[in-house]
Length: 213
Image 1 (tube, helix red, strand yellow):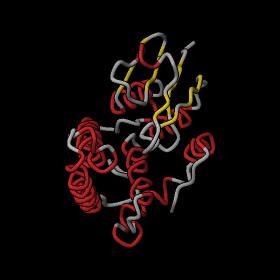
Image 2 (tube, one colour):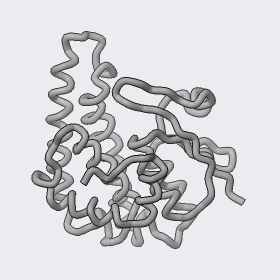
Image 3 (tube, rainbow, N blue to C red):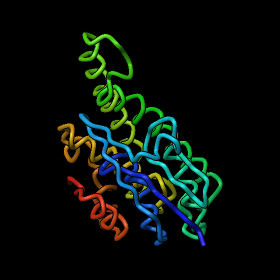
């Protein structure tokens, strides 16, 4: 029997693997944490599990896994028949291409500058400029996403781990006051299709959040 413990925070990037866990219908222990612009409150054991002090964290049969692309891969391997990493070798390449870019560029670089500017400078006077550049980078990334999407799925015309990860950043854009529906119709179409999935509804209910469409 697979033993799974999942550490997450409402509306954070952990929403993506949270959706995947509901997709495969596996039992797991859920450990909620709090991460907002103004407050970070982790479970006491998280510092030991993940010295990087970041969410999400997945403990799978005693193995601690961090970083969303790695966690998404681990969950996908629990249900290989679902092809969450893509059906073909090239689809899998594209999935990793998407996940690495979303994690490293849109999340860490762009949203990092916008939402966590103190990570980029110890100079308080530099913070407004970092946030402004972060917002510019976020919108540039959204523009690239809009151009890359050609249907209601990001890769191979099937649901993959990329789709719920894109959902996370769509919600964040809405929360930052960006008119996502008007500016990014293809992106909105993907999210509108995604939120009808039972697993997405279940994860949102568990996190007490809405799609923000």
